[in-house]
Structures are given as structure tokens and as C-alpha cells.
Length: 143
Image 1 (cartoon, helix red, strand yellow):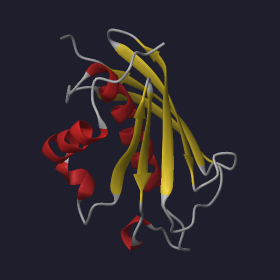
Image 2 (cartoon, helix red, strand yellow; image 1 turned 30 degrees about the horizontal axis):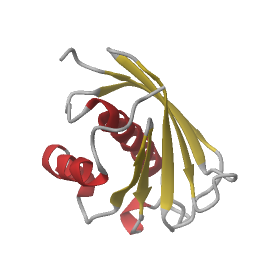
Image 3 (cartoon, helix red, strand yellow; image 1 turned 30 degrees about the vertical axis):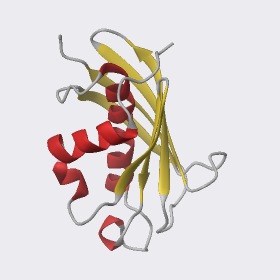
Image 4 (cartoon, one colour; image 1 turned 120 degrees about the horizontal axis):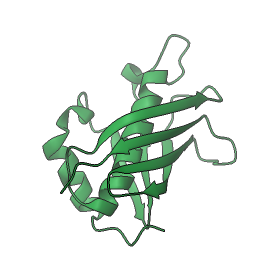
């Protein structure tokens, strides 16, 4: 079981601004809303450049939300290590999301010295009706 986080919402947000500023290209659409023991929630407030034809939030936007959300859950536990990198991410698109805020609730399933596995559930207000689900693996560099 993961310990209490070593980073706060504020320190993670500052870390993202410094080490991953391209996340917010076009405006501040991504926001860390929760950090807990082995958990994190990242919110996307999509605008028109996050949409696909037909007016739903695009798959690449959902993928980004899941990937960054899982990364944040790990960073909150291990500290500000920029080179924690994605080695695999599988995503299932379940429902068409409308242009409204999306929450990505992430939960660490395994946190080892070199690898972490995280589950992500993306929803719009009701976690019982997710729009996507992802499982991701990350490589943690030696300290």
C-alpha cells in the first residue's frame, strides 16, 4: 500500500509548470484536483481544440488525461522525478464524452523501486458511468 504523498497539489502543479509546460498549451485546461495515498485526480476542462468532429472530446485528449493523471499519482508518492516515463498504456473508450469537465481518478496498483502500475477511470461527474478506463505502467529511474 502506498504511503502518504510526498508532494501536494501545489508542488505538483508548480512541477508541471516547470517541467511540462506544453501540457497547458492553449490555456490552463488541466488541473490537479486531488492527491491522496496512492491516488490522484486530474481534471480536463476541454475547449474546442480538444474536440473531434461530432463535438465529443477526442481520444488523444482522453489519452493525455489518463497518462498525465497516472504520472501525477506516481510523482505524488516518489517525489519530483521528471524522468518517470510511460512504458505502456492501454485505454478503453467506453462512452462519448461531451464538451464538459472530465475527471481522471488514478489509483496506484503497484509501486515498486523501478516500475509502477496505475489504473485510471475517466468520467464526467458520475464515476459509475466512465467514459474511458486505462491501465498504465511507468519506469522509475534509479535514484
